[in-house]
Image (cartoon, rainbow, N blue to C red; front, top):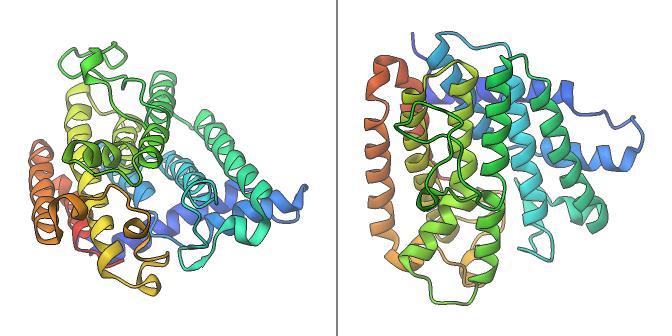
Length: 318
């Protein structure tokens, strides 16, 4: 019997946390302060959606969960957490609440928080380098993730060429997480446009969600055509996820969100509701998920869990 979304989420958290517990140094390991800071943020909670997407995609392609999939998910979660630690710093979003707990710099100071983020990033790549996967797939995974978390140098898979390492046209360059963060900062207090808000969302949030799905497929041996479908699915689902995040920021309390509500409005961020309004934003997120589902048609009933998770992304309340 297929698992419910609640069960899928719980299973994803358990698998990810088990891998993270094995991979992260304990608080008794020197230097104590940095390892305590890393674990404070990593184990502060969270839905582990990105690792779950990676693992469910890998299981869909392979038919069973590849042994290396939880390690891939853990590495992605480390990168996500590093980005949150840095995003919350006073020099960036200056937030003191994350996942319902004090942010890393509030507890450990700015210097240690910066280093904790740095350490999680480097440990993530150490973990990726140690994945039990064919060498070509491992290299491709590292390259995909490095591009998705960087400043926007093009993605390595060119649709239609059949060669997963072929260069692509400059016009098809995909944005990266850090690049999206830069544009987000520089666009504060400016009049948001549809083009600007979409560019920020696809880069700052969507890129890591997309690469979670793509690398799960690569790990499991997906073909170039299958990877192209997974990428298109991820791009649409990732954008829908951030649109919903924007909606929740203006409709939910800080207690419900686990982070400071209304922050985007207060800092005049470029958000989807600021451009399109709340109702249109909800409709567009739902339309993106419907379009994303068409990319999974080629996988048939095997895609049921990924579709259920994607639906959850747009229906969640926190």
